[in-house]
Image (cartoon, rainbow, N blue to C red; front, side):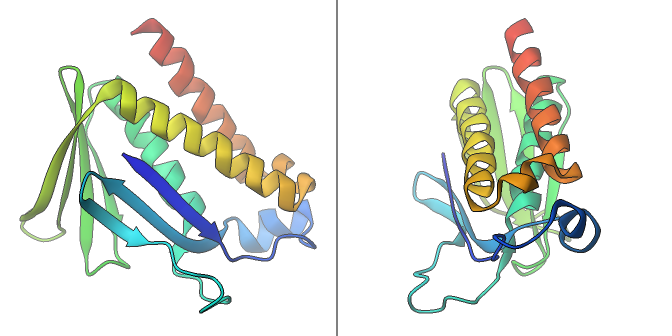
Length: 165
């Protein structure tokens, strides 16, 4: 499993206060890929530099919440309204994570993939770290925003829970 994204939001002059009140997220292109199956896309910024297709923080945070839920043997459904009323259903089954991309109504499967739990865990935790690092490089003040602080705290929950498994 791989996660890729390209941030298009210009964060360089955004204050912590402004981000907390007016922004709360980072936009750009985003792709989740498992083997030959993918969701979303990462576009060439030189072709379309100002396009904002996905709420990147929402996607990463949702996958991190799904990881924590899987650690607690709970399923997670992540709505993907920007992708034709579809959703991702993530659940743990033994030593694996099952990721099912399905239609929102009727739960009809588009595809389903089985991922080793440790690969899923590593991908999500590394992606959270990478995104936070990128945001910090664009504007270090944003590392103190409510949303990034919550994301870091949730990551710590996942890491500590993983150490107990």
